[in-house]
Each structure stands twice: as structure tokens, then as C-alpha cells.
Image 1 (cartoon, rainbow, N blue to C red):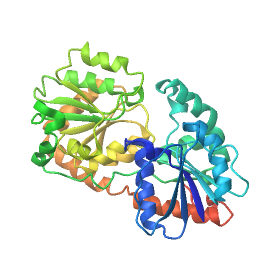
Image 2: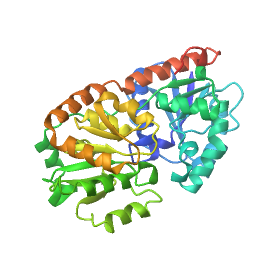
Image 3: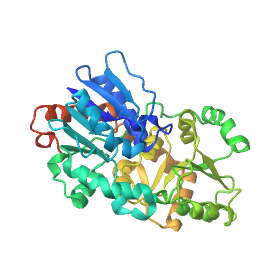
Length: 383
């Protein structure tokens, strides 16, 4: 079969969220699939490396950017290439896919339905306009987690038989690392703080990540953890004025560091050198940083929401959403109770191995076989 796909996530430099998932699963597909041909479509150039056995072609160009390109240019290319399947990798399908081409859609989350106020206005408008119709037109939908599968069923009315969980995982470079080695790699990033203990949070600086709760909690434990800092690694996003002011006006500027975007090669060491990892999100489709932290041997604390409970399982500690007092208590426990730390680290390493891009690629290929059979994958693969 010929499988065309929206490869625009490969254009992004960041490796979390959708770009990280697409690059991770496509790399696993490239190692596993020696039969099908893949057509990678994007509005601008990107880098992708694959083994010689992987049959793929890059299609790049177009006068329109982003979603407009997907809606206008992709159907023309699909028709020209006579693709058997089109895979919409990020929530949206072109409205005019040629007859006879099956359509596969990945829905990473439904934040526009659950927490619309946390999104950029334009991005929210695009999702409200296109995600629902795309989900209802898709022959099969892949989701990041069972939690997202429930959202798709409940909020978009999609039948369970058309949904499969094909989720993310931590990339291969995340593994336990000796603290001294990890800190040695971080000297350039952390400077004078390279030898100080710290609590870590990772994610784009935007409202859904709820980092303000982490800052408030950390302010409460400043005396109990006098040498620790709170490090927040993530690109500047949107609607983050209140977050920035909470650092400056709350007197925490010396105890909280906003590291900005951290390169891929430094993230494993950043996790490994931290005393604990915190993800206080309001909503997640999966929560890749949780899997990364566990794979790096770092204890995990998350907000008590369905997707993060699903990822962390018994390997993490969950605190009530929006409760900085409880988060503060758990921070102190995890940073000071050595027996608790050992239990969480041991469970986390086991838990992280349950998420695999190779396994997700195998599920993807099974769905493809169902689509190629003409009956749709829904009759064969379900969440």
C-alpha cells in the first residue's frame, strides 16, 4: 500500500508533544515495515532518517502554511500519488480526500473541548472547526491513551470499534544516569546552580501545564528544602503573564529558574539529576514527560487527572488538582524520604518499559492491514 501522511510535525525542532510522537512512531515504523510505501507531506522541508529498507518519499512545498496547506494542497498530492491511505497525524483531515483513499486520524487530546480557555485563540478556532468533523469522517482513529479514547467517544460520539490506543513513549536516550555524570553535562545549562539539588518541571509555558501551582507549592517548602531550586524547562508559550509574575512578584526569582527550551541532548541529564519531577497539568492526552522521567530513574509527582494516573500508575504520586498545599507536602516527602524514593524509582523504571514505540508501530501496522482489507480497522482493532 501507499500511505501518505501529514509530516509537518517533523519540521518542528521540539521533541515533546505531537512532534515527539510522530518522530518516535515513524522511526519505529521505518524499522518494522518493509512492505508499504510512505509519502511524507509537509509545507516546508524537514529532516528524517530511516534505514535503507524503509520505502519513503518526501513531498515538500506549497504556497500556503499550516492547516491551510493541509486543506488545500494535501488532497491534490494524495490524488496525484494515488495513495491508498492518508494519515492525519495531528487532529485534522483534509475535507476532500479522493474517493477510494482510506483515512486514518491521530487525536492526541481534546483540550479544545475540556479546557478551551487554555488555548491560543487561533489554534482553538482551528480545532473547534475541524477536529470533530475529521474524527467523524475517519475510517479509524488512533489516540494517545485510554483517557483520550473516552473523550473521543463521549465528546465526539465516535463508536468504540473505530478507536485504538497507539500511544507515545520515552525516546531511547532516557535511562538512569549517575548523578555526577548528569550534573557534569549540565554545567553549561545550569551554571552556578549545577551542584544544587532541584525539583524539575518540563513543558511549554502555557496555562494547561498549571506551573503556577508548582511555584506556589515550592514557595511553601522553601524553608524545608533550603538548598533546592525549582527548574522549569520549556519554550515560552502563550497566556503566561500570570506565571511570570508569580516568579517575580512572589519573591521566588532566586529559587525558581525558567530554563526556556532545553535541547534534546540535555534533557535526559536534566531529568536524571533532579530529585523529583512534577507535572501539575490541568489536562493531558498522555504526558510524555512522565514516561521520560520514569525512564530516567526520577521519582514522579503528578496532578490527579485520568491520563496522568494512567501513565504513572503506582509508580507516581498524585495530588489533588489545584492543591498547592498537598503538592508541597509530596515534594518534601519525595526529596527527603529515601525509602519512598527507592520505591518510586524502581516502580518507575518498570512502568516506563510498558510504553514502547515499537509496540505502537506494531499496532499501527495492524490497523493498516485492516484498512487495506477494505472493511475498515474498526472491526479488528479497538481501544
